[in-house]
Length: 287
Ligand SMILES: *[C@@H]1O[C@H](CO)[C@@H](O)[C@H](O)[C@H]1NC(C)=O
Ligand SMILES: *[C@@H]1O[C@H](CO)[C@@H](O)[C@H](O)[C@H]1NC(C)=O
Ligand SMILES: *[C@@H]1O[C@H](CO)[C@@H](O)[C@H](O)[C@H]1NC(C)=O
Image 1 (cartoon, rainbow, N blue to C red):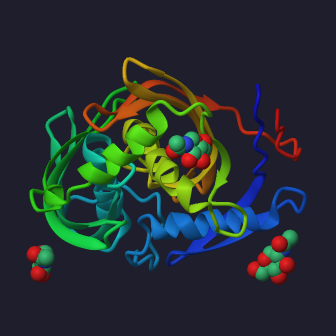
Image 2: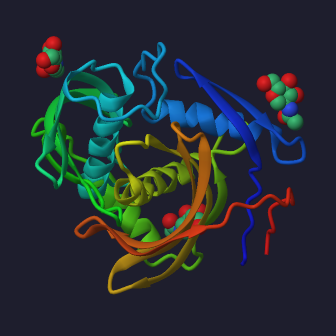
């Protein structure tokens, strides 16, 4: 393994969306706080009215309280879906607010949520309304949720020119991009790396979409490593290490995602693999 991340996350406690962190001191004390700050930027700024409700409470049926977890969890899946379909280095979507939600059982096959939400495009801070349907299939083997969304106004946000410029710049470049910790432990990053951070969030959405169920609420915590590979068939190719945070279990998950991107084809995931959590407390191996 050429890369070991040692976020030894002991406990993350979230109270009304304000995370506090306990972490082993040798493991980048401030990075976790920073990445949680970023997780907040990317989609937890909506107020989840926790009350007595535990984040993992499930199976609310009928009209849902839009600010409670069941509606929020389903709405989060729409965010991931939109990023997988329409995300790019210059177009990244996040859940802004849930306006209304309704849940029902669908015979024996699963559960369906009907949602009215608003979604934000982060680079432009534009907020638009969407209606969406999220279906969580039931079954022994967990299947990915199915999403349908109607967000016409959001999709008018055009990032073609910027995406194309980035593509041209890195398509034939002699030196391949490589970066670590986007953002770094102080929340900073080289402006040149920002599009690669966004691309990581889009790639992470593929993982989060397929891993989501009614009991999860995933955010991208941090892009731990970016490695650009040789361009193939006009597609930029990357290997990313990404840390995801599930607000419900408070777990940080570490995924490796191999994907390609071009303005015309978008992001295509070739391989994704969950890496074991590391309890070793070592410093990152910089080979
Ligand atoms: C971590 O952040 C706190 C404040 O948030 C600061 O006081 C402390 O010096 C930082 N530690 C390191 C190692 O940067
Ligand atoms: C989005 O929908 C909400 C609730 O239906 C409404 O109050 C709000 O004005 C709408 N916003 C936009 C930008 O259309
Ligand atoms: C090539 O990539 C490096 C970073 O990997 C970047 O700094 C440089 O500007 C790129 N070259 C050109 C011609 O854009």
